[in-house]
Amino acid sequence: MDINKKYTPQSWPDHPETATMEGKNKFVGFWLLLAAESVTFASLFATYLALKDKGPSGMEFTAAGLFELPLVFAMTMILLTSSLTSVYAMYHMKNHNFKSMQAWLAVTVLLGAAFLGLEIYEFNHYVHLGFGFTNSAFSSAFYTLVGTHGAHVVFGLGWFIALMVRNAKRGLNTYNAPKFFLVSLYWHFIDVVWVFIFTVVYLMGVIG
Amino acid sequence: MAHDVHDYVRTKEEQEYIRRKRAQEMRHMLTSFAMMIFLTLIAFTAVAAGFSTYLIVPIILLLAGVQVVLQLYHFMHLSEKGTGTIAFFMFSGMFVAFIVILTFVTIIWW
Image 1 (cartoon, each protein chain N blue to C red):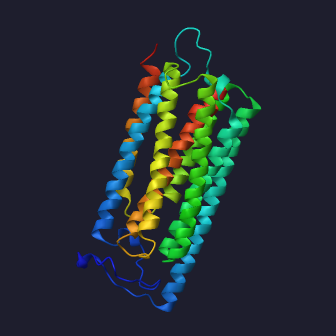
Image 2 (image 1 turned 60 degrees about the vertical axis):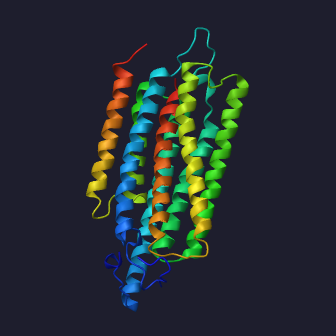
Image 3 (image 1 turned 90 degrees about the vertical axis):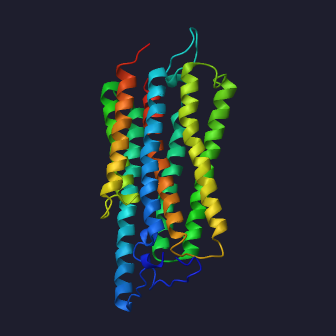
C-alpha cells in the first residue's frame, strides 16, 4: 500500500474502507471494540438502574424532581443530526470528494461540540443545586454513566479533528479511508448509547 | 501489501451507475433519519403527555430499540454483505449487556 498513491473518482474502490488488508483488519477489530463497549455501558446502565433515587436518608434529589426534558430534547436532536452529517461525510468519502467530506466532518464536529456544551451546562446546573458527584449513590451512578458517554464524545471530537488536520493536505487514499470510516462508526455508536441514555435516564426518570 | 489493492478504473457508464446507486442509498439514509426524528418525537411527546407509567415504559423502550436497529443497519451499514462476523460480535456484546442489566434490576436489590 502506497500512502501517496493518487486516486480519481473512477479508480476509487467501491469499498475504500476495506480495500486493503489493513482496512479489513481495522474494520473487524473496531466492531469487536464496539461490542465490548456495549458491555461497558451496560454495566454502567445496570449500576444506574440499581442505584436510581437511592442515597442517604433525607436526600432531597430524585430523578423525577431533577431532570428537565427541553434541554435533553435539544441535546438529542443535536446528536442525532450530527449522526446524519457524518453519514453525509461518508457518502462524499465513497464518491472520492475530499473537500465535501471535510466540510461535513466539520459540521459534525460543531454539532458534537454544541452537544458537549449543553451537557457541561447541565452538569454545572446540577452541581450548583447541590447534586454533586459525592451527594449520593444516585448522583455517582448518574455522573458515571452520563459522564462516560460525554468522555466518549470528547474523544470522538478529538479523533475527528486529528484526522481532519493530519490528512488535510493528503487527500483521500486507501490508507486514510478506513480511518475516516471508523471514526464515523464510533460516532454512530455514541448516538446509539445516547438513545438509551435519553430513554432510560431522562424519559424514565421524569415519569418516576 | 500491494497484492491487496486492485486498481480497476471504471468506464464512464459504470461510474454513472455507481454514482446514482450511492445517491439513492443516501436518500434511504435520509428516510431513516426522518424516522429516527419521528420516533424520538413520539417518545418525548408520550412522556410529556403523562400517560400511565406501565404503558409508557415499554413503548419508549421499544422505540429506542427500533431506533438502534435503524442506526446499526443503515447508518453503520450492518445490512451490507460480508458483515456476518461483526454482527455476531455485536449481538454477543448486546446479549451480555442485556443479561447484566437484567441481573442488576432483578436479582440485586437494596
